[in-house]
Image (cartoon, rainbow, N blue to C red; front, top):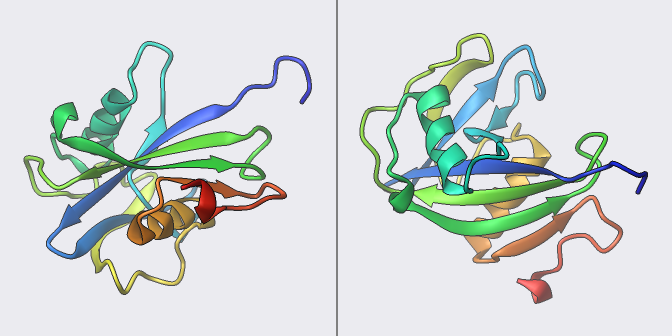
Length: 153
């Protein structure tokens, strides 16, 4: 790795209601036209649950108590940008408010999907985290030579 290179830490929120998962369709930015989870980057002054709760409010208008966020998966990703990323996935089954499109400039629609019937066009990075979550794996690799290894989960 070149000097000064770092790893970006992303947080992803799996809003789960009954047997459905909330996804957002990206618009005009990374992954245009594809599905993604509500997500964002960790700021230096935040603990991991804080940006997850913040992004829930900013992207889909729901209020999540950080205590209601449960860590379900961590994904170490290479090749999703100029530096590696560490994706931390939180499940929320309790929040206040009904999700809606809070960022129409970045998102075209917010929609619920059955956990066992997700759309085809999910961005590979969040999809890998969702699939590992559904399989009960708490750790995965994506884009590295050794790929996701369930034996490490």
